[in-house]
Image 1 (spheres, rainbow, N blue to C red):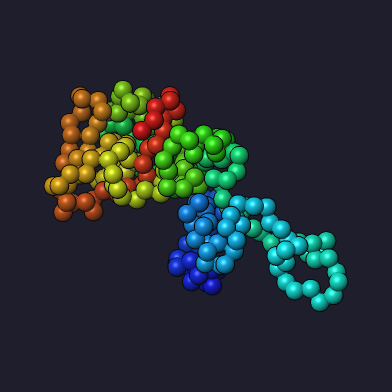
Image 2 (cartoon, rainbow, N blue to C red):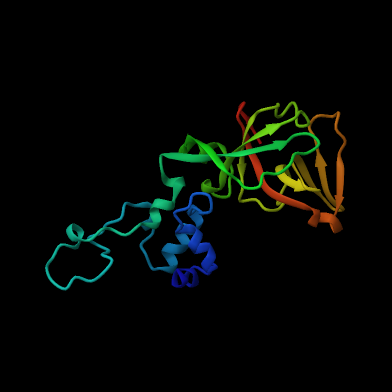
Length: 227
């Protein structure tokens, strides 16, 4: 792990998460990182997209004429972590209800209670996401984001966003409460907006940015609205 991390100029902890079997803490390899690994490790272009050819790349040298492919268990491949190349993407559904109102208590842990299978081609064609493996599904409660969202809608969140990189709808914590609101970055701070005009806008000055923790950006609502 340390050697691979050095090759691709990443922290060892990042590589450990890529190789982790724990679905709650692992990271998947996006197309950009896959190409970086291939260049850094002097692999042919597209190598990580293809099924592993064990006969061409044995995990240890052969001391005789034994066919290693018949006698040795193939190693766990990095390509198995590239969800975006699979036909079906399995998105975890978290036991999280985020407030589209005055706020809700954040959960103690992001517990996975179910999952939804989605065609990877649909994600690539319809959504702009950091990495497919960062997608999670949560429930939105309240009416402050009406008519965009309604109470109980299933929301797809890209957890790869940890800051307001551009205007959008974000899941965030503020003053110990979990919120779903539209956030616009302005010269004097962050403007927090409810699509429901009955709720007031808030401006968070730059010197108070640290009071907001971004957990992800909402990229799709399950009544069919793109964001």
